[in-house]
Image (cartoon, rainbow, N blue to C red; front, side):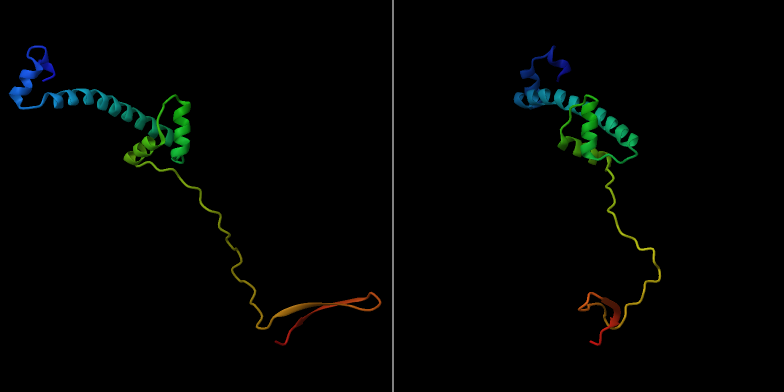
Length: 135
């Protein structure tokens, strides 16, 4: 219909095809915007893949967003999340620090508690020693 709109009237073509004119004009207005958006999404996907690859696949949404802004590409965070999901791109999360013991033979715990006793004498002498309590 778009190609023949110069030869025939839109009203006549819509009547011949049983299509409402409002639907034709809606389609006409939406196709140019959606095509532009699809082209821009494809270009952004290429750029996102390149930045992600250059970062050794560590960058997630926040750092990708900053890098895209530095390169002059305006893109919202929700759009970026959608494009990353479509491309299967995920950032690496830092692993949490876990304490790993290297002692393979830990000391056995005594069956009775051990206590340290310090006794102060009247003249200032001190005595100290270890004793296993009898509990």
